[in-house]
Image (tube, rainbow, N blue to C red):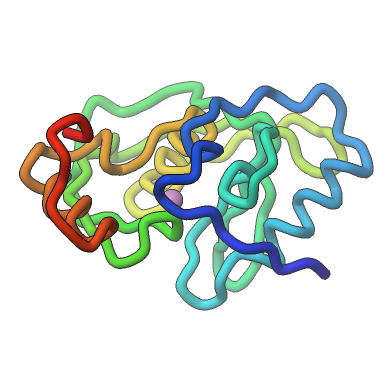
Length: 167
Ligand code: NI
C-alpha cells in the first residue's frame, strides 16, 4: 500500500512521453498497485504512471468501484464523431476546461497477466481513455482547449497573471 503524491502542473514529468513496458513484471505489478492506491476514491476517474512520477506506459481507471490497469494502451480506432464536455484533471487542481474528444473508440492493452485485451468505450469512458493516453504522451487538457479557456485555467493554477510565453 503506497499512496503517492499526485504530480501537479509545473512538474516536468507531466510533459514526458512514457515508453512502453517491455515485460509485465513485479515492477509493473507494484506500479499498478501504487496507481490504484493513489487514485482518489471518489473523485478520480483515472491515473497515469507519470502522474506519480514513473515513466512507464501504464494507467488505471475506475469502473463501478473496480480499479482496472491498462498496460501499453493503444487506440485501435476512433469514431469520427466528436463530443465537447468540461474536463478536469487531478494534476490541474481547480481547473476545468472544455475539451473535444472522440465519442467512441476501441482500446487495446495488456492486463496484469500480460494478455492482450481490447475494450470498446463510448461517452465518459472513451473520454477517460483519451485523457489518460494524452498523459502518457506528455499532453494535458490545456493543450486541447481554446486559448481563452487556457488563460483562465492558467490563472487558477498559477494564482496570478499569465506570461505571454505560456500561451
Ligand atoms: Ni488528468
